[in-house]
Structures are given as C-alpha cells and as structure tokens.
Length: 209
Image (cartoon, rainbow, N blue to C red; front, side):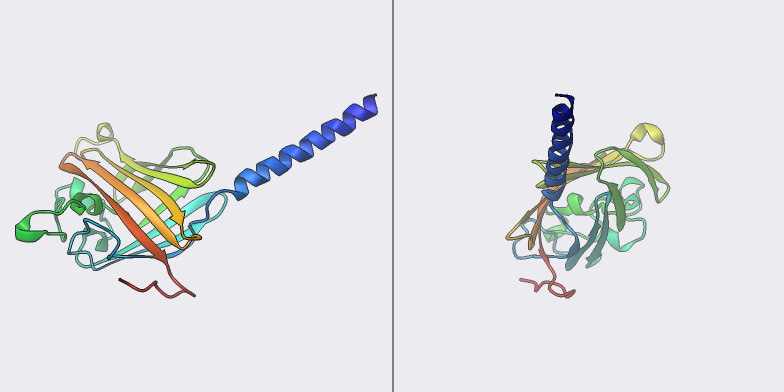
C-alpha cells in the first residue's frame, strides 16, 4: 500500500511538471525587430517618419530598444524627461495641422530608448535619466497578452511631476503582427494610441505601407 502511494505521488509530481511547462510554453514570444506600419496606425503624428522596436525576450526578462525617426523626443537619450521637466513639452517634434496636436502626440512624446522588464510579475525600481521609476510586466490571458507599465511617483521628487506609461502587447497573424495599445498620463495631459508593428524578415525591416 505504501509503495502504491509513493508511485502515485511521483506520478503527481511529473504531471504537475508537465502542466507548469505547458503554461510557460503558452506565453507569447515578442522577440524580434518590429517596424511600425504607418498605414495601419491611426492618429499617428506627422512628425513620426519611422518607429522600430528591437525586442529581446527570455524566461526572465523582456528588453525593449525603441528607435523613432522624424524629430520626436525619443531621439534624445533622455526622452522621458523631455515632457516632465519642461525641456520641450508634450508637442515637441510631433506637431499637427496649424500647430494643433493630433491624438497620438502625447502618447508618443514619452519613450524610453532602452527598457528592461522582469517577467516575474513583480514591480521593479529602476533609475533612468535622474528619474526613479517603477516598471512592471504582467502576463494576461495565460500568456497571450503582456501588460507593461512605467510609473514616476510625483511624491518621490518635488521637481518632477508624476507620470504613467502603460502598454498592452498582443500578437496576431501567426506572430508576424504586434499590436501595442499605448497610453500616457502626465500633468501636461494624457493620450492614447494603438500602434501596429510588423516583424522584419531575415533581419531586414518589414516594408512600409
């Protein structure tokens, strides 16, 4: 009887291991070079000529390199501070018709050229351009959706207003299309935009439409 219980216990552990592996395997892999499809992204400021994400992912972390061309604040190494410290403001480089900002302006005026997120679901404290930020990545829908957030708490610095950046990442078309729903909230205002990226082929950027 004792031997039978031992065998059942071992089988239970093996089954649990398989279940754990299955859950991990179901998580989407966002690795690759992603190029913005301007034709499918609505509300994109005219100042944005190109937007590329280079993503590296493993079981522990997600590393995102953002490259924006066309005069946006992300071309600076301290792009996040461009809006929160008064060096440029929300509309810098992304003007609309007659000087009126289009809907995606604020949502794109705060970008971190380099960001690393831990995939354990825990909030991490990081320092970027003299800012003390809290970053977090959390899986949703059994690993099909990844929610990212970057928060600057205004209580941490009297000279820097607080802000929040949130993104929801999803894949479609067999992993060849990345949709990023991005929202930014600051003392200067808030904005949202849905960005459609296509994966590059053999290391080359996807064609622009």
